[in-house]
Length: 116
Image 1 (tube, rainbow, N blue to C red):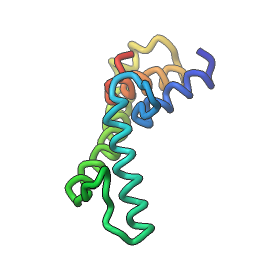
Image 2 (cartoon, rainbow, N blue to C red):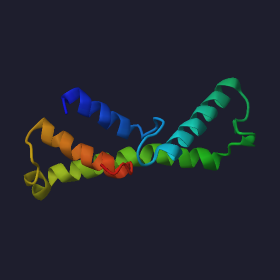
Image 3 (tube, one colour):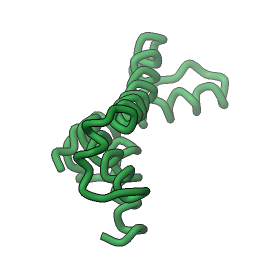
Image 4 (tube, rainbow, N blue to C red):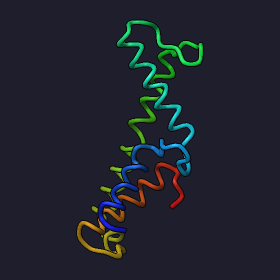
């Protein structure tokens, strides 16, 4: 792929495959985004947030926040560990920035249940 083409695929995975028809975890990624959007809209309007007629409690918001925060943290921690250790760095097929994006793509794909 070109740099822009690979970057768009990486961005789509890092957003949690929320595009319709996303591979892997598309459905629950879209539901998490809907819950967060309803919560923010409820804060702006000043009403209790509801989704499909049911109130969204603090438990759902905490779980959505955990989903939003844990996935990028996993990707960044494992990518940093792979770059710091000598063995994964020696097994890269490319050097420089392309090798770094290769490792970042691999861990992003694994954390978001993409399968590529």
